[in-house]
Length: 85
Image (cartoon, rainbow, N blue to C red; front, side):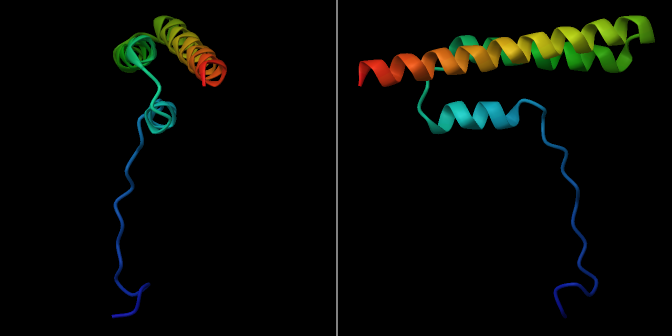
């Protein structure tokens, strides 16, 4: 059978924070705080799915803020690692 004939692939939706988690884990960064921030973001996104529209927007904004904090933490830890090397 050729590669295109009958080939079916399942679309797997990646968790929004998976890239950031992988980035940190791949660099060996201690990720305890970062993981907490990303967990909060995930919880906000989960709650937003079932929330009324006016709450959904607030929860999604909160998730973005937690993700920004996680990104800032990753940069901070990477910067410290560079200076301690």
